[in-house]
Length: 484
Image 1 (cartoon, rainbow, N blue to C red):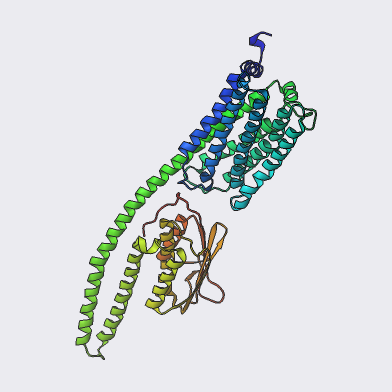
Image 2 (image 1 turned 60 degrees about the vertical axis):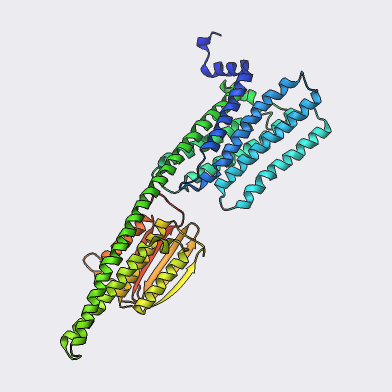
């Protein structure tokens, strides 16, 4: 048949068969380069929890590429080494190659079942150890075609399940990752990698050479070639190439995410410096001026007779002035990043509650049902701190309440927060059929939005105000920043 009339698939199949040593070297090189690329470029300073597991994928690719090279190299030593030595070297190599898929298996399980840490170690060995025992039994019994049988068994027991679990894990992560500026690009890459691993499980694990046992007697490489005129080795090579391309593309996307995080950190550092400057100016300037004004009013009050109408007005003015100074000090405390972000969330809110009870003599019930060591990222913890500060200010100034209840729960990767009081509640606007919170509560909406959360204001039948909030617990570097 002339070359022009031969399809590309047939031509490539014949080319691979005619240049098998070169083809196998290139196949191993693809995985070897992928492994080195992942291990060198690996970074986990981003919003995706799965990225810290990529080192396992890199280790698998490195070991698999190395095993392919060794499998090509060992037979070349037959003129120097005894056949029995070659045999046992081949057996050891297959154990090494199968162990690479133990690592891939663990990688897939960590993506698919991130919370079940003990299963990441147990399940892969539930496949590897039986394969090892069967292989040793076959060697001891001295069955014919031992190497081929052990190799086929490893493809069924290790290659196939490890690749399928990895595909499922990647698919799971594509639907459960935090949304960031690069989410769409990264999600698409992860989904394509899931598809590639699915095909890899078929061509590297399910479809093997023809053997006198099921399923190899029915589903095998010869029958596949008869149906498609495409070599299984060609499909494996293509899977490897696409795996390398899209793995490196995923790394590129994650590195862009890491660069975005670094830029956010630099901007946050500038914001913190500006906040410290404003806090210092407020303390040294405004508060001192208000304090001096209070002393002047107190001096005037002493000069007035107790029954004077001006005396009553001055006392009211001094009360409002003291309230303003208290509010301003609270906001300065909010600017003090270390005092708000250095402690666990539970402790930070406890301190805020104590200040509120001391300043306003309003009791607070506080029920915390979450991780007691939980500490959000600095920007997120500050947002949440200011949300509660604004709610407390609303109670102190407008609600005429005697008691406040706070309930914080942790449900999976989310925090559920409830804030309620027994005051008079928000004013109701019949024309809009809704409650009308003021400017301070508008700022609360903005902060909850920055936390990518949800918030609902309501007036229970018993009276008062109830605020329900839901925010993700995980770090999300895609947050916008609201300067408090």
